[in-house]
Length: 152
Image (cartoon, rainbow, N blue to C red; front, side, top):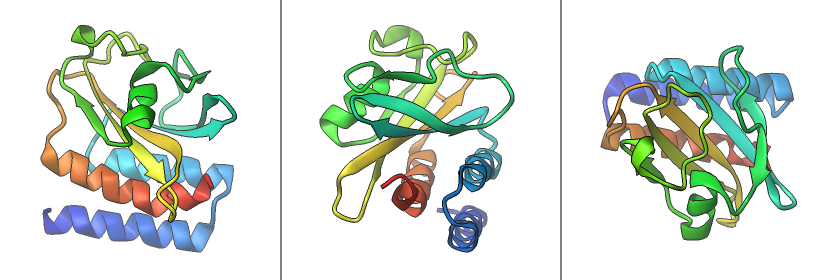
């Protein structure tokens, strides 16, 4: 991972430690993740009973599905497999639940507590096809590790 990306992860980790897990601070963390790699949209979903519920998202436009059953969408697929999913072209994946009509690719990262139990999802979206590579996956998985405890 590039030194600049590692520095941004350090900044995110320091912010989480200093600010705690308030709704406002989790929204700020989502914005820091978005800005770090110039993603179009970041959402942090928490599992509440049998649903994913958006805890924080970037931008001013709300997603089409601020809550949905844990068995649906790419988040449901990640919950089932326990592993991150990168979809280069969401129009070709029947599991995709549209957040915005302009989304073309998406990466979903499970948020796991220290006992490896999944408590939510980190969702990054792009308006470009095949926008996410290995460095994005590594960055987002590390960022997810820094914020998962906020959802536990």
